[in-house]
Image (cartoon, rainbow, N blue to C red):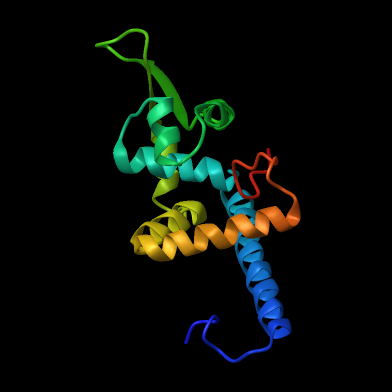
Length: 162
């Protein structure tokens, strides 16, 4: 039975909301720490590698779109991955103005042992929900953001470390 139809006091519902929010934050934090400790990457960096590993070479703009991020946010992630020898930027042979992001052999080897990225997993789960459930969740999350007064905060990643 949904929380809306349960005869539970408001105080108990608030307690359950807080517990669930803490669980979500803790799960994402645990994941991010584990990835950084075991692979030397942030969660967002691993997610970017997974996306490129799944789709093959892409432009920065296309990768940002797949990850539901602004391209300017992706620049830092790509820069750090490139400096770690995980990604290279190649000029597109058909349009020399465009750069294509490609995984290195080092990144491909890492992906064989790395866990699935948490944010990608969350995104895939949301995509499996029907539109009405996503709309309800969206409305609830917007309410939480307003309650926190966080409408103006820029938050491109969970626990990106950068």
